[in-house]
Amino acid sequence: MGVFSVKVLFKAEKTAEKELIVDTGSVYTWVSRKFLEDIGVKPKRKRHFKTITGRVVERDVGEVTIVIDGEEGTIPVVFAEDKDQEVLGATALEILGLEIDPTAKRLRKIKALLAL
Image (cartoon, rainbow, N blue to C red):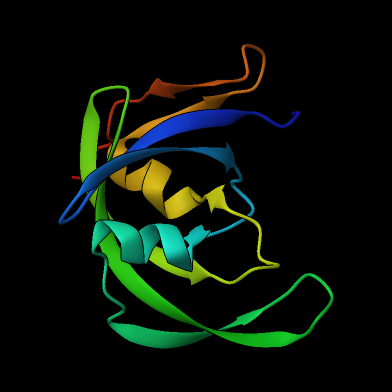
């Protein structure tokens, strides 16, 4: 599919923009602790995550409002430490109603499915 990134607007006590790599292999969105703290995001809980190498790490998790291409929503966000990669994960895409267009290497809006 290839790697690409998108601009994400973060809204908390302060508003700031950051470019993130889109990674549907990551359930959560990971953003540097310093960036999140600088805009006023507070940790709500701790979670354990298994790395690709099988190592288990503990990280703080909070919530933040983001905007991408006019779509806004509140997502869970992991406070990434120095060696963690910053990524936009699958949960954020689902919450915002976005999917990957692998040919154009961009995000596009999708229609929600109604289960009757």
